[in-house]
Length: 232
Image 1 (cartoon, rainbow, N blue to C red):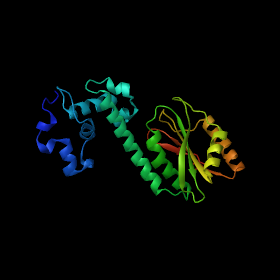
Image 2: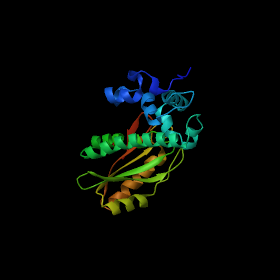
Image 3: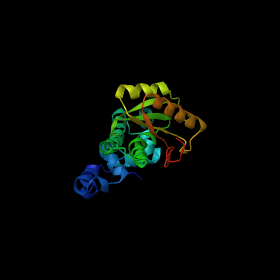
Image 4: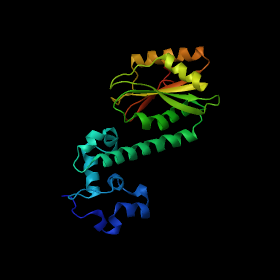
């Protein structure tokens, strides 16, 4: 049964916002954090009840991230404003993770390349229902310049052109690159097409004096480094 009392009538120790301020955000459940984003519930549900309903309906924060605004608004109590608040909060969380990874990065070893790809690319790619193909451009000291999304496909494949990669390399004067893409199926095992694309990009990079350090394929809870597997 939903709690009928609005959050403002709960005991102070149970109110999400007060709990965050006194105990810290990391002490709160997903539902309590989401209720702070939502701010209000409905006449029959508190904001926390609505948050719990959203989390259960979409199967957690990952499902909420993947849901579009129309799907969120199909839930009673979620209008356009609340749907926008949810999407904005989840996007900010994703960007915070990737920004921290970028600020610390310098690629010195193959292990660094994999670690960076997983800390920077995985939050971007592991939740996506479509294949996305990204290239990370590095300077002469192997520090990140920027990353570029080169293509977006469907749930099974994406098409990447060596010409597009080399254009981005030339525009950024990049000395090295790491490429990454996701497998929405969750299985990061490389396909024959993945291997062919990798070899084509490796040869194209050689022609312009750029090094392809790695191609990392990201699944749901795992990944494969083609460099580490000896497939580069």
